[in-house]
Length: 183
Image 1 (cartoon, helix red, strand yellow):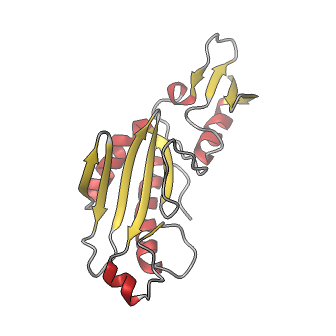
Image 2 (cartoon, helix red, strand yellow):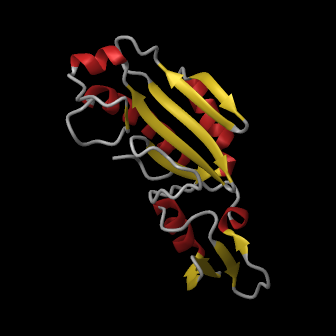
């Protein structure tokens, strides 16, 4: 079936359904982008058209400021239960909750930097922020070369071991959701 997409006011397509799903998985389309199937009368968000399909958006454009030191992933809102179940199964402890937002921590942070996970339901998307938090002791030992927060992407020499461990763990969730992994 032919599908047309309206992204940032520009009409794209037509695309086959498989291509639209591929573009969603790659983050080329957002679940908020509007779509219409050939022959239908009403545009609808892709999240409505493809309920339950995980969406990753590598281009980060949240409505609220996000720290540049955190790795951010956008998913379909329907993945919330899966994400929270994964967090509980992997020993993440709820540290704070404000409205719909939740912040989890894995590890106590004395000898090993804890992995932090913030879950933010936002419109039809689920924004996940993942980062490593460094305590003051570790920062002093590194002559403050180690920042207070660091994302889990690969690259650089700072906090290589905790970043690798956290990235590998988080990529297990992304594999389960069938979305692109963090490199």
